[in-house]
Each structure stands twice: as C-alpha cells, then as structure tokens.
Length: 301
Ligand SMILES: C[C@H](N)CC(=O)CC(=O)O
Ligand SMILES: [Zn+2]
Image 1 (cartoon, rainbow, N blue to C red):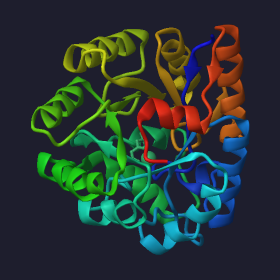
Image 2 (cartoon, helix red, strand yellow):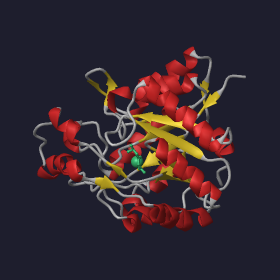
Image 3 (cartoon, rainbow, N blue to C red):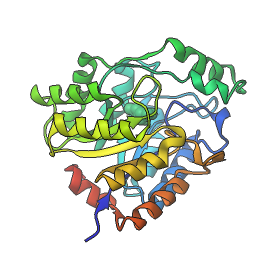
Image 4 (cartoon, rainbow, N blue to C red):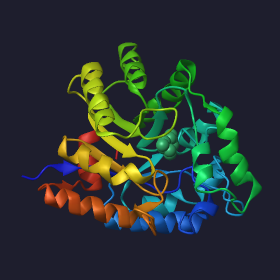
C-alpha cells in the first residue's frame, strides 16, 4: 500500500504582489479558478488568503473571504483559512475570517519573527505600484507579531468551533512554543505541523535545516504529529522532495513560490503539484484525497 502524502496548495498569500508575476491570482474569480485547478491537480488542502481585486493588496475582511469560500468549498478540498493574514495586520483583524467561517483548518504562526522581504528588491527593483515597493522596503523594519497571548487568542477563538490548525513553524523555537501550548492544554489531538524554510527571519532552506527541524519536531512532539514542509521561492520543490523521502507531507502554491523551475514562472499551483506528483510517483507514493487527509488530520468534515 503506497504512502499517502497530503499536498496543500497555498493559492495567493500576502507576500508576493501582482507586479511580481502575471499569474498571481488577485481577484475572487482568479483565486477560485486557481483553487479549482489545484484541487483537480490533486491538492487535498487549499490554504486561502484574499486580496482587494483592484490593488491586489491583502484583504482580511469577512466580505472578501465570503466572495471565494463557497465556490472553493464545492471542490471538496479541505479549506484552510489564514490567520496570518499579512504581517502588517493585528491579530483581531487576522483571526476574523476563521472566527466567522469556522473552517475545518486554519493556519497559525507559532511565534513572532522578523519578516525580511526586502532581499526581493534585487529581483524587483521597480514594481508598478508604489505600495508594492513600500511592502518590500517596509519589511526591513517589520516584525510579524504573534505573541503567546495572540496565539492563545486564535486558539481560544477558533478551536471551540471544531477548527483545527496548520501550525506554522519558521524556526526551532516555534516547535517548542507548540509544545508549550500542548502542555497548557490549548492544543489537543494530533498536531499538523507546517515547517517553513527559506524566509529571511526564519530558518534557511538547506538540507541540514530540514533535518534540524525534523529532529526538533520529534524531540518536542514525539511521533504523535503530522509533519509537512513548505520551501519559499526556488527551494520549494527541493524541500518537498526531501519531506516526501523523510515521511512528511508537502505544501506548494504561488503564495510560497512564483516558480515552476529556475527562471520559469509558474502559471499555476497545478504546475507545481504536477511536479510533486511525479516526485511521489518516483518514490512509490501517492497524493492523499481530501477525505483521506480529513481522516489523517481528524477534521470535522
Ligand atoms: C510563508 C507563508 N506565507 C506562511 C503563511 O502561510 C502564514 C499564514 O498564512 O498564516
Ligand atoms: Zn498564508
């Protein structure tokens, strides 16, 4: 029986901006179409952010999510609503859509961190909209804030609705923070751990970084967790391949990387998922269906 690997597709996010790729979905119609393509390509989970259709700026309003969620629900995939929003937002604003729509899954960053996007200025010296350039430059002095109180607030707001979490861990300390929340009873059941590689401010994207986070997850959580990875930018598929070979799960999508290969812009997450599918095929593994993922993650369905 081949091992089932849960593939998450992160559709648009809040880090990349429209000037960086013509393929970045911005409008509700584009985000829904991207979600359908990703689900058809085999993604079991869709990680969802919303944007203002005019400017492309991140939009964390309940209304903005209300324009995309019903259609994405029809794909049958597990819907994972962001509580990270954009690093420039406060926790009350960030948690609102997940609190309102009570999804099966919501993302939760397991700590605060410097969030360095400015190195992207080298590749994008002059983006078309001023807010896009300010977005990169502003990250020089940006802290993505998620204090223990913020984390408790998100857990306390969403867990009673039966929502479970994609615990985003950008460094070893975040895994210890998750352990702490388990010990205090704020987190119950088998945690779904999403280790994030290659974002400046967090751990790097070298093979050693992956083995360090894998070992730390085991040390802090024992075997009772599901481990998944996401690699930022050009590291995406390399990190995905390592995770699959090491017994883990995978996240791809234009939120995390705009690339399909060196210098080749991805037209859709579906293209990145197809590459993951061939890697898994080569390893004698298969992508989990949404219902198999629900069983593995203990979701409310
Ligand atoms: C690196 C990813 N953008 C992390 C993320 O997806 C955060 C969230 O939405 O909560
Ligand atoms: Zn996200």
